[in-house]
Image (cartoon, rainbow, N blue to C red; front, side):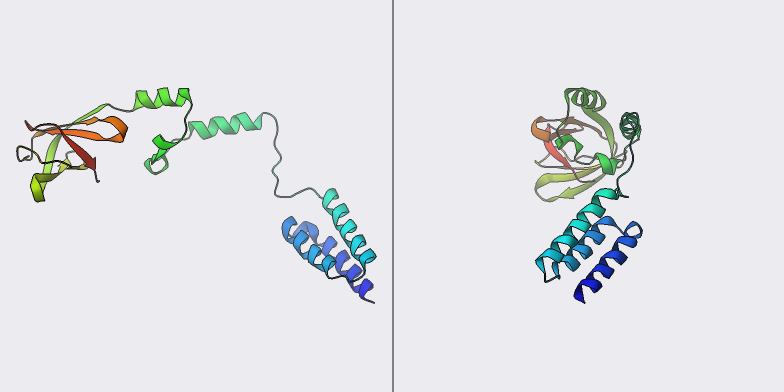
Length: 177
């Protein structure tokens, strides 16, 4: 009697197999096969499961053609990236080609004008530029910056930045906004 119930459950499960995900089918059917007490019947259940899995293709696997992969790669490279997608990009492994292209695109120096100044303790200043960027000096400035003063920010070593505000000396700086 248990064999008939198991066989009926297996047949029903195999009949609805195309309608449900393949992985869920395999887990349910494996559980029903595992519940069979007789070793011969359990083996027959597993064999039937293996045969049905081999004969049914995976519905989730997309069909690809040989020319589709290069076209998809070209589309992915041509798609414009947002600043959020580029965040931290400089830390990813890159090919020599990508490194050369990024070096061309990256500006070595930013020249702007002070739009707003906020004084912080120990003669440290938060300087907002005309383009909306806010930079904070990591060292004391020799002169108090004023709105309208010229600002030059350079790339330093190891990802650091150097800032010169007005006629002040060069100091290390960090962008905060």
